[in-house]
Length: 250
Image 1 (cartoon, helix red, strand yellow):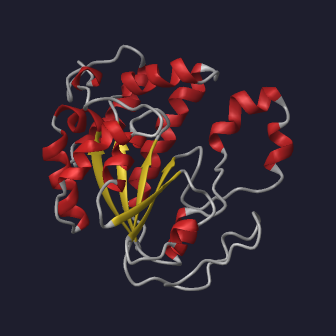
Image 2 (tube, rainbow, N blue to C red):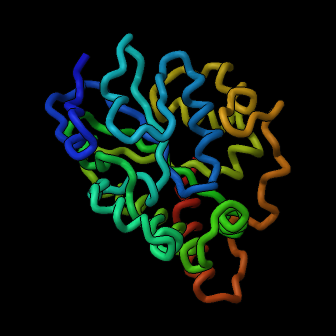
């Protein structure tokens, strides 16, 4: 099993060996449902998934399982940017912390750094935009423009990943997943090259932060998947980007 050179936070990106098999990465904006999707994938017996691990530890997993990690974008991982220690100074200023911190990747390795180690299979999660924005507003103390910019940057990342030579992408709709989890998981397993395992349906009970008895279809947005009109031009642009991604989702 190959390893990653992780001598300190600054040099975590110095990856020195390569794996033969692809690794799985679950990506999505904050509050878009990444945890429940990642939990389902992590429940598969062939996968070893780390939640929000930002130093490359998934490349040190032993036992023959497929390494995987869940990270949010843009706030935790980005295509070609990684954490810089100078950001600690920026985050000591409250005004900066609440207005631009979401743009700064916390991961010590970028997605391109990861591809120096192995190819990636990126599960790109999207959620109906108005529901995503509402969830962000309930949780974060950011200005409204930061919520919208988070989704804009996330969608842009998903589009850019299609041009990355060592990254395969699969778009998953949170709303479709919550509405019919087994069908979506079977499709996702086909894409990952794994047999479906019913243990994945235990994801709500295994969710480390928000355990539930079952998948909650009441969290599915009532907004139509396509054709919803937005009066706000900025939201309308976000929805167009979302629908372009949704058109190629499982």
